[in-house]
Length: 485
Ligand code: FRU
Image 1 (cartoon, rainbow, N blue to C red):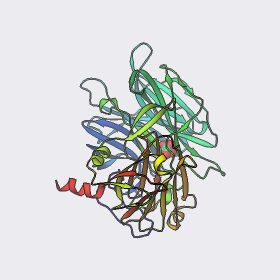
Image 2: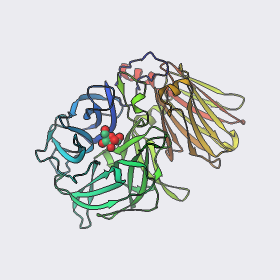
Image 3: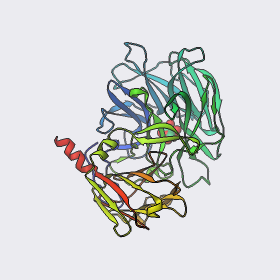
Image 4: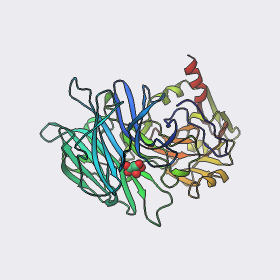
């Protein structure tokens, strides 16, 4: 979406330039992510009639490159008595068959949720719902968010796997099908982990460890949202657990969920079906149910994260899920317009449009603590600090305009980060969206930041002599160049 609308209020967030936002109105979870016919299709939870959650329908946008987006008419509109909650789309793997199949949650007004089906034979633009809907119904009230993935069963036969949650019970249910219509229950995972949360938007992703094709694992992705009167004010977050899937049961390798992103604003992330080269590309919703309704943007509300390529890498003897930006980000950094060096005698100020990619490297042994301050025209301060004494990267968002968003919006988020190794930090700032990738995606931190609508200055400094090398590129300039070429 490339028509920035600049709201007047200070602390307001300008429209991102290189992230997907709806043209107008409310957006939450990514739905039905699929690569088909040379395009990336993103459906999304959408209120076609207003800036708040409600009338849940599937919005639709496509992109050839995950950068330039075209929004299309609503794909699955809500109906009297039924909202279209989250779900997924898969492309037929049969030769010559172009059908796309969506499995989504019908959230009925009588407090009952079940899984429904729709198909598209025109490349994902129009959809026919199945007259037999719902096709998978347990008669319960929080059975939702079906994610369908292909798998091969113990006899070597290709099948479809559906994972969905009983949100209130903190359970993931696994089902199998050959025709995407009749589903057989395979097993149930959970409950596990913290109580006082609902589980939402699961995904099960097959990935090799350290690129070894003979060591394949399955990674369960989960979104968890605190509920109840004394719910955790930090709100929504994503977790994962690495394990094995034997065609029937998912068995985790370790007995706990690991946080997927250390910021406050990455939720409901799932991967694309049928991505080129079998890559696992994740998009998440950059917000938090704790304050999503008060995020100061207009005439739209809600944004997707950068696309992230998922991989499993052994780090310090443990298999970790790593996430790196996928696609244009690396190309842009390679065309960087600014390469500079900062040290204690030489803090660096990067003046940007507020749409900036920046890659920094330092060796903590030479720099001591490192600090980046981000300032725009709002009364807010966002800082990123590698505190070597504390052994952490700390991201603070504060100031009057942060407090004005919601009482729980000011935040301090941390990522464990020692000083034994050199550090590489990729910082993406696109209007109100800040995403930080630490050491090639070993850790990520995603936050909304109310820096205002004007230019943003990033000040980089360290305690000792340095150096910190900085490569930065202003995306506003690049996009202008792109459009005129
Ligand atoms: C997650 C979620 C899903 C649900 C959808 C409704 O953010 O609560 O569980 O399907 O949003 O919009």
